[in-house]
Length: 351
Ligand code: NAP
Ligand code: ZN
Image 1: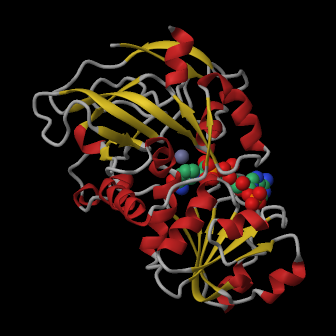
Image 2: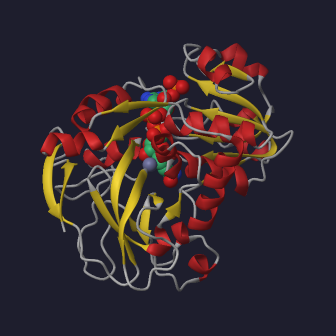
């Protein structure tokens, strides 16, 4: 099937229109018309080839909500007209122990990315959600719970699950003390989800500029990491800190904030970090961990949790042709708190 999207053609040119093919339906495939696509900082990293594994042209987008337009002969869970969602992966080996546990993101053979991946059957490059249509195997589709706002549900598929998964892994619940570094797309979802799970939540932002926002999102306080006195007063104050900073940075200022056996989980920077002093790590028996997205079962659990608790991201709707401006603003942390592309704008643009 011919489709249209927006692709990066080189690491340093703006995204532009791109015509390409979506595969014909396999028996276990679902075809969808994409309605909304969230804009993740990983889309920007990938367009710019910050991680070194991009190909060109590449269509970003892995926070996808759509409507089913056709299903393969063996598809049993979805019907034409259903509202479905797709996140950061579209396939995995489905045979290893991790896939067996529903942790396809940790597939021993590597999961297949929604973009920057390679189709396991045809070997073709995968292309993401900044496009009109998508074809995905049934097992990697999620059901959008009835009543959940479709546009605002989109960012849950990456920003939501990437922060929900560590909250669940580290058993966050009533009384847990959670810190969130960086109030952006992931950070603001971490706040809402941790509050929803009953935690006491502190935003660790570079300045106090976002203090009113942090409180409005449900956080109990905002602490400016640029204020050494406030940081010193917060020593030993957290069980879990989720670090969403999208660039190389130092963890040294944050480690003393963890209580004994507390964990700083890195979900932001993918790649080298600044040199670290191990003293607070060893003396406080503190931990540093990482976490990638989440499995399909946990993603569905998160969607259902959000529907039940009415947890949704704060979004700014944009047209497809505003994506380059949105990337520029995201780089300056000028987004409150997730851009979502109304894909009908692309249909109108190419009509
Ligand atoms: P975002 O919306 O741009 O938010 C990042 C936040 O980090 C900003 O709002 C800002 O918060 C802070 N920040 C930005 N630049 C900074 C700098 N130079 N130094 C310190 N803090 C800075 O990005 P996002 O979409 O949340 O994504 C965050 C990172 O997570 C990206 O690197 C993305 O690739 C990664 N990611 C990882 C996974 C995973 O599976 N682990 C999944 C999705 C995304 P303040 O203004 O409050 O300081
Ligand atoms: Zn993402």
